[in-house]
Length: 600
Image (cartoon, rainbow, N blue to C red):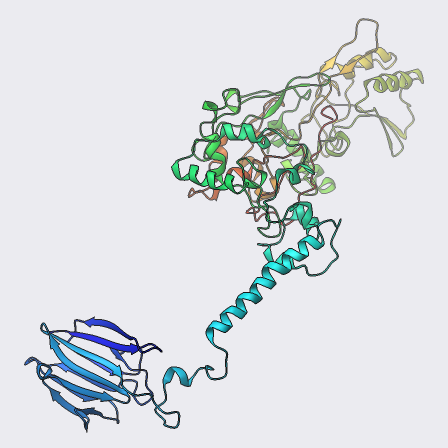
């Protein structure tokens, strides 16, 4: 057999409420403790007052577990054996337990049979520890609190909104409608903290796109609601229902806030999740047949090869094209520069660098950092400058007078010609002992240790300026070794140098931050030590990036969403910075890049 506990309670109007609890056990506990099978809320009952045990012969063994006993059919005792079939009554404090048998189950009906007097120690446990006697009724308190909440969180904020609706800016103080805010504004909109009405133009109406475009006027294709709607993948049935509900409450599809959510916390705006991007870009070419954008859904698995913007024809301005790295593009920058020669650990350049190291901070050989200097924000690198980065080895000196070295003008071929003619018109180099002709060398290697690679004039007859001019612009000369020289017609001095363009940013549709990769070495991404041609594009392909980066939900070392590199409204400067990129300890919102003059 098992037990069925029926506990009876009564409402204020006398209605009886019966709760039944079956227990398929052979032993139950009676007491005031909540874990007891028969719980009696009565201070006259011990926490664990008595134990009822069902014996093999069908009888109940009732035993007190504490000092206070109980009553069996009116007689007080601490232990008794009861035959359930004959029926019996047990009393514990103010509760009566009636025992019977129904269909082989021992039924115990527990009911309070008397109200305890406040003058006795047997007080109702629930009422004893409450403020019921001195507090208003629960119903009155519920109404009062409801009214307070309504006034504080609805009426007061509405009054505040309408009171400042036409104000240009609110005074610095607490405003009740800020109680509705889900969080602080992001850093780009932090200045609007006291100007709620600039975005929330109507009460109880979602922020309209007109509020956004009043400031953000120049946005590109993604912000066109009609085109965005065409690009999106078809909705499933529950998505269609959600869309209908949203449109009913004046929230049409394609609103700015679908992507750019606010009040999500201080700092950069929340990044757009990968799922949002992939809902269009997975197979966008099927819906936008005029797009040139390749399909992409996950950086680690489905993403096109990088397409940097390179100079394909050197002109004024140069011709630039976006070409996939799979096609191994070459760049016509106008510069001749062999990286492998300058980064060698054993050749003449290395020996020269080792000899000049103490003066210029070089090591035993040149390294990338000796020429490529980071911008102050660490994002990119400054353009290479002849005087700052090259002149310590590649001097354009033509003579030395005392401690002063007379040099040719770099970057101005006409001045080079004029200086050489003036030099020889004056009779050539002085021959006094304190003066020295700067004898040049064709290349580092045939060098004097720790000495610069001076301008080379070839086998010059110093009585003839024409010969010197031709030599400096010809093969083996100071200009020819690094630049593409355009020779003038016969009898003309109009020597020209093909203009050098240094591309400061190749990935115009994405963003890369060198500061975030400070733990990597240059050679882990750029194969400069194997490059002997300045036209080679030393950019890592997508395979290299995937050694660390994978999709947003991948197990890669750096799970990367689309927003880590792409931003809808990025300009030529630093774009919006993803909030999840913890490497940025500074504000890059105003960071720019040093575009070359031709692009400006």
